[in-house]
Image (tube, rainbow, N blue to C red; front, side, top):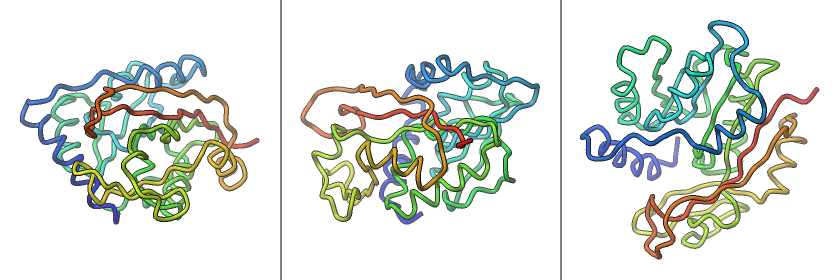
Length: 233
């Protein structure tokens, strides 16, 4: 992954978790909302879920509670250290480090649920984003669901970034120097999902959280679209 600056930001943040200086976060209420609305839960024993960008492991327990065996991937080694520590002894969780997040080491149609929560925009360019999306779709079961988020037009990072290519932003804050993310508008996202990737948008939502301070940080105001996607039939 070329966006090494973004990896470094999260690596530093997850090291605080490893050191016990930052607590594990609760599952996203908006992810829960999508799953409850869609009545998404394992229908057979042993069904698998992929948490792409597992972070601090906040969604593992929730996915387990719905009957899934969870595989969590990340490009930040300390993320997996935190997740493995949190779920030590949990035989329904496996952590996998990714050197290349656009090439997943899993067979086709492995996962009933694929989750990419507040992660995939950091692939950093339209081409890499599409490559990552194709991989997530490849490993998703034919009747599976893909749950993901993308920044809205009001996400705080857009106030501190230069648009260096179409829908591609280069962060200029001290905290995010040289980080690059891909963030098209909602109309473009729907076109990409439906026309380029062969997906159906089953649900959408929009949510915000964080502070309203003027100092940009990981605690600044976040604003995301959430999507529940299935293969077009």
